[in-house]
Length: 158
Image (cartoon, rainbow, N blue to C red; front, top):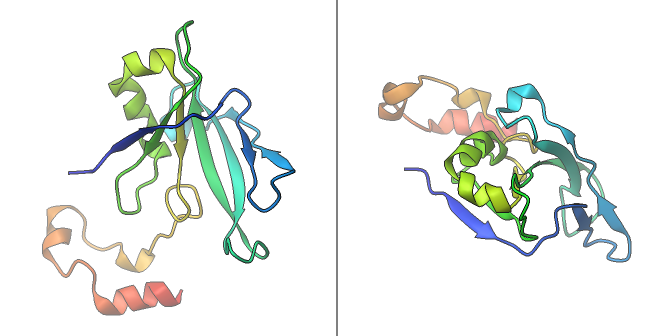
């Protein structure tokens, strides 16, 4: 069973201003626009990308795009703190579950925005997908050698 964690954070989503830890005096903003229809999100969802350094300690070098989606509250009596959804896992993206969450929690969405972020390496945030491990699917795939050592090594090397 997939573990689902819902956490409430005191973030202000109307502007969705995210302060970069590398330069606290220079706030960075995420431009949100319509999400692709393939996302499975409701039509009013807004999506964007926030880039972070792959190596957080070095704060230089290659960057990873983190995919962000916001579902605005539907009611007139909106609260300022959103619901921040974290997908279970390991490796699940949060955004792909946004459509289901929106339908499953309509009373909560009436008053609160929903924020979905695909963590680095999941979903549309530079997902780490091993094509070497895309073998048998369904029940048989779990009964076979689920993570063959040679294929895991090949994925790691790639």
